[in-house]
Length: 92
Image (cartoon, rainbow, N blue to C red; front, side, top):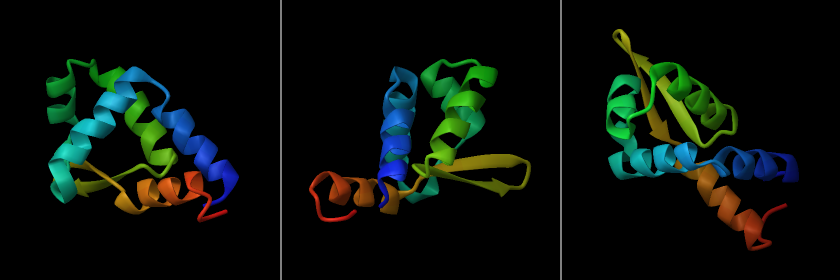
């Protein structure tokens, strides 16, 4: 992991709603959740949620895929693993 990518990931997580969102998606595993379900569980307005989801997707911390008419978001486990390695000095 490059330093710029690590900084982007930390920056994306440096906000309360995004931390809650990421933790919620971790609890859902690979199946992920739809944006509507995420908004309902977190009590976040859809427009605000969209901003936070985009931030996490751009940082590579979560993925999104279209299933029918829904967007499903899930964690990107490789990224958080690489971030851990970067912090431990095992990756540059």
